[in-house]
Length: 93
Image (cartoon, rainbow, N blue to C red; front, side, top):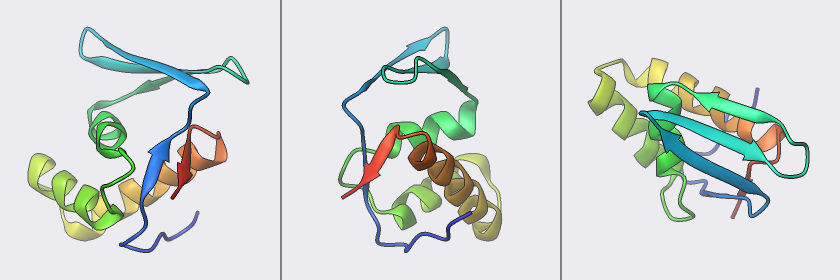
């Protein structure tokens, strides 16, 4: 697991398709044809990855929305972003 800089920014890769269906986010990797289903925390992180939002802003959103500690939110964001990057669904700017 990486521990990303709070100022790091990511954007979604072009080779994916994603939709929200019945409140659940589903991502299809066009290269690997894998399907990823996101929970509510992961969906908020995913929706915040827009090529502009810094990691620290995303962490603050998670803290506010789910009323969890900053430490827990940071861990959740770092873990999920690491998985997204590993699966080539996002890239750093």
